[in-house]
Length: 220
Image (cartoon, rainbow, N blue to C red):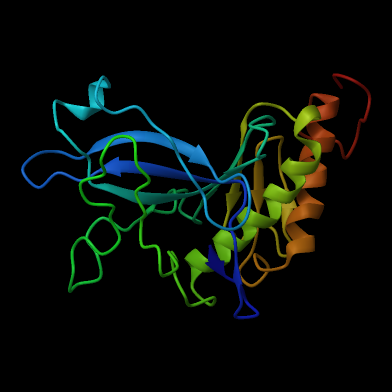
């Protein structure tokens, strides 16, 4: 779930999340990665007792990490991700360490096999509640691009489309290749802008070449 520029909360459908086991005395273990398939409460089922990542621990303390990436809920058609103008990936959001008061408030502690374990059942997990931050804007951009993946996943390449934000190269945003969209500051929150550029990405993928300005024949 994330906060939009209209200050309302939207379920992040099609976004990638990770579940981790929190350990105090050793390194945390990645349990797995899931794509949120619908709005509302989400459920994830995973093996524990016989899995390598359990490391002999009886019951995991499960917390969530949000990755700033999205896919079609069908799992087809590649992934949308995001990086900043210096080409650094936006950092994932983790709820590992709680709220500064209770370190386990966002974790399902001692999740026992065979039962449902809730992560923060009475609240919302928000990467940020300030829609003006670069992180909030890039999440909105990823979500807009996901809508294109959701519709055209069966005909899009199985590759990662990177959204570069903020970019100074394209004042109105542009798809510069089959795998890269550049978006200037202030335009990431425009849903129609991202879906428009994703349309160009789809076009270049269908023709099998990055630049269609001069030659639209197959293979150039």
